[in-house]
Length: 281
Ligand SMILES: NC(=O)c1ccc[n+]([C@@H]2O[C@H](COP(=O)([O-])OP(=O)(O)OC[C@H]3O[C@@H](n4cnc5c(N)ncnc54)[C@H](O)[C@@H]3O)[C@@H](O)[C@H]2O)c1
Image (cartoon, rainbow, N blue to C red; front, side, top):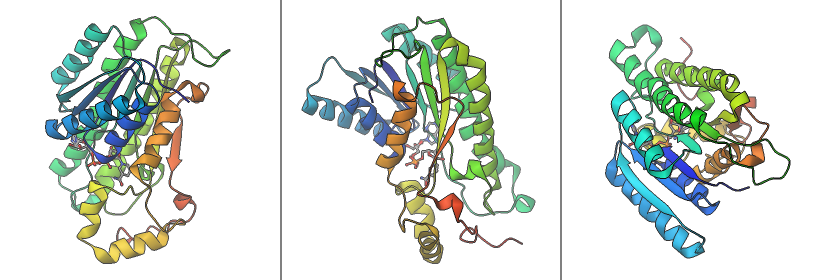
């Protein structure tokens, strides 16, 4: 499995974005654009990537960190177009920016502002990045795949959805619905761009160890206990395990995988009771 060329990662300062950035760099990405609302976190990721690449001492490499709000159309277009102008092309886009639901509220009691907040970051954010990247990818030349006999490649896009895009959880309707929307975007973009040599896929992790889940679970130890009991492997998935799935979908190793959601949940979706996140009433 290898990654070549220019890669943009949003949410690059977060747990999954950082793990993905580091994994793609270890697999050979030459140029890495780390974007996050939190510039300091993106810079930390960039520094870690630089250090990792120095240690494996392999080829030309450049990494930059950028402040980006994925909800801002002009800023998204600006960053993507600037990267394309500077580096000549965009080979891979990873949409890993996101936030969790602030608290558990049924749809009946949900405020419009909280609904819009999650939709803006996940659905609109993925749309803006994906649209901007597709406009660049569509115009660039194909590159020969590193695996002989595979179709020439224009680009690959991977979005982080969630186990929530595969079903429903009580009290998180805004998050769940936004992730379902992203899944629909993945499927539509996949068939719209397949003939152009651009693949679009999603990774749907269950509960990932890291700040997003820690914040949520530290406030509710009894939920944490029940949730871990619900997971067949008895533990959450690590950001690095999610990054491996993302890297597969971004690489030519998955050349015939398109419009797919790769669930990374240790089998949890086969057995979830849906109780940890609240009652059904
Ligand atoms: N953590 C989990 O359990 C889990 C499970 C399934 C799916 N996911 C999804 O994976 C993705 C990454 O989550 P994570 O666990 O790395 O979370 P995280 O909180 O560690 O990282 C998310 C990053 O996104 C950035 N961000 C937030 N709003 C932004 C905006 N408007 N513009 C740009 N950047 C923004 C944050 O600054 C942060 O660095 C999200 O889409 C999340 O919904 C997470």
